[in-house]
Amino acid sequence: MHIVDGALSNEILAIGAVVGALGVAKGLRDMDYEQMPVTALLASVFFVASYIHLPVGVSSIHLILNGLIGLALGWAAFPALLVALLLQAVFFGFGGFLVLGVNLINIAIPAVLVGLLLRHALAITTQKRQLAMLGALAGGGAVTLTAFMVAGTLALNGDAFLPAAKLAFLSSLPLVVIEAAVTAAAVALIGQVKPELFAVAARTSS
Amino acid sequence: MSAPLEHSGFSWRGQALRHGSSRLDRIEPRARILALASFAFVAVLSQSLSVLVMALLMSISLAVVARLDIKRVWRRILAVDLFILLLLISLPFTTPGEPVFEWRQFSASEEGLIHALQIGLKANAVLLAGLTLLGTLSANQLGTGLAGLRVPEKIVHLMLFSVRYMDVIGRELKKMRRAMRARGFVACTNWHTWRATGYLIGMLFVRSLDRAERVHKAMKCRGFDGRFFLLPTPPWQTRDSYFLGVWLLALAALCLGGLQ
Image 1: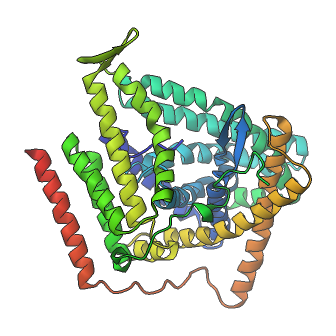
Image 2 (image 1 turned 90 degrees about the vertical axis):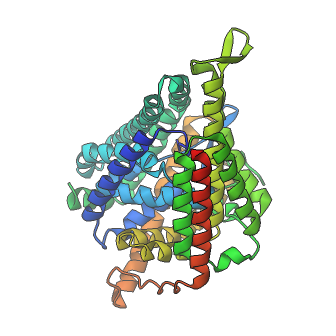
Image 3 (image 1 turned 135 degrees about the vertical axis):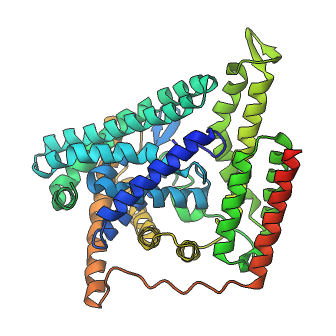
């Protein structure tokens, strides 16, 4: 899901940087120092999740979990993901530095959308089945949107990138199923064991 | 011991870059961040192949000076290159232009080939420079460096918190993975695996959050108001100015070479 430096045109890089900065500014305004621990925690869950590789046939795939992050954080997903992506770029070389904005919005916008749409429904239920359904919707929806946006940014570069964009989109379809299943289970568990997490999140920022 | 789920990078500590002590270590974080930012701009915005080759050589020589562990760096670069290989292979065939060679009914164009080469060179040059200049810093140094460059304090604090939690979460994850293995869990492509992984992540989250709350309350009792005191940034020294000056001159020479 990370696009590398040098692959995108300058206009797209600039748009990504501006939109990313606006999102981060909004997220920072919403996030007070009380919320800092949860935000940082989710940033590191994102970071650690990229090391949980699940087998798909002969290959393997790693989780993104932006649906879960959006549910728990809302707008604060922007700064959390910025920090996680920056650390990934610095210490592991995933992605790049000038494309940081583009990579950020590709992952954070779906997270925020999912969060704003679903967290209120999540806050009022403790039923396992409903929680799992909402989780599946959040996880699958966020990853589908991310895959779509990654393919879109590649395709916006010019017609020559179209096949690569299509391939990138198709190759992330298995991930949609897996993320939906994993997020459903995770949300069902968190909603039952620690329901106040989503409830508090929905109350503090709307 | 090695279950299919176990990826070589399961523990991020093992994946961290290693490097011998070098002269670069004495350069101040702020100077390094500025050096990387200027380098990334020049490398990404320039089009000429010769400039890009020179930029790649520049970052390679810096990596040699910084005495990076070649094996670890190679692994990182390989991972990135496999990732963009897809793009590089498809581009020559999809860009219209002068055909260079043909494969079955597809013909590769010169423009596409050059574009693919540009992307490969840019990505690798910036990647290597990033790993060398910033990857050799500790997360704390990086934080103070960013704070010194007027990055909003909240972001710096968030980063410092995250780095701390990564360690905690990573250790918790290892413990839970070991417990799963002891119960005979093997990851496959099925619902059971995904549900178990979801529970793993949920539980990881709940446990770490409990711990974070405990620590936070304890810190509040001791008068913590949500802010770390950042260690004062080490003073900017003459050698930092020299380093940055030489670096910027080299970049300017690169740009001039590209214009001609």
